[in-house]
Length: 418
Figure 1 (cartoon, helix red, strand yellow):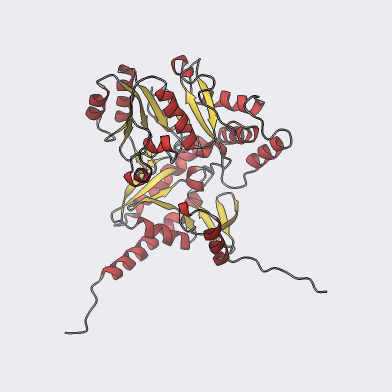
Figure 2 (cartoon, rainbow, N blue to C red):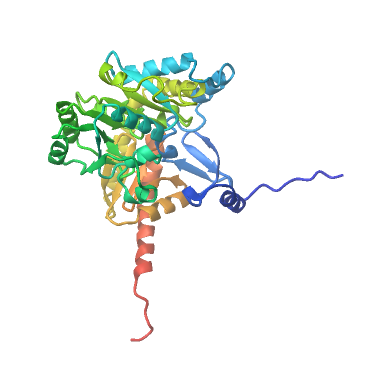
């Protein structure tokens, strides 16, 4: 009897199976990816892509990094999961390392979760424990999709289908210092949530002046400053945490996730100082998987590799070089580059970002469009100048092709008369 072989599934097969098996919350996937190595991934058809998004700022060390693989494998051989009735050495060591890197004072502490949304949920509950009724968030904010994190997220399209959301949240115009001062004046605000760089809003940094005003005014009114560094933390901007680029700026609470596990799910909340440490008491919050030994080992491997390979300096250098090279293109569609380190947004002068991202994918580059006029890049921290330069070289052609296509689509159709 001859051996029977089953044909490998095609991209179309996977797309059909995806539609039948998964809820439609993400729409139709652009590709089905099969493997990754370093800064590249391959789809099921064997096509290679330069990954300039890193799972949206998650794969800090790229794909299949030896240090991360070794740490997870070694930990899995000894202890994979325990309930939080028990502790593990990796959990404690990771908390200690995060407190050190955050330059947190004595009396600070860490809570581990599984995602950025969960970290922000915990921070929301910390704010509630102050007893004050109001919480402030900023215009164009994004803090997650769970109900508490969604209540802090300003985009109406995300919020409306799920209202009523947890109450007491008000939104301020980001960058408006007077509006902030007026909102804090009554003295009944529990916390202000802010992202140092608003990634989902199109990679829009808060100015150092506004960040300092946030710290000064919240301190004056006894209000917690909670910085969401889910996208900006763990070396992404060339500092361990983006707010550290602003001198003498220390929050009361910071939330982390994404790059911390290098692809393994983990989130974290850091409270600064004894005044915040005990706001959440025993039994008032918890998690089944948060801080499990595997996730903690992954986090330690990521932080250790960033330290050992001096990736913070590398990120600053590579990001500055890329920004300079994009500016030198002097392309009529490019309106500058926003962001810091390797969290960058290429601003376009026309609402063509989604079309350019699609053209980039077809050309072998993974980027995304957080809004209609911004291309976002958040590649692995290990990417080189030379690898980024391949995208820079391709960018003018991508922009020209999309612009010509858009012009053709909007050109008037001749009726054939003279």
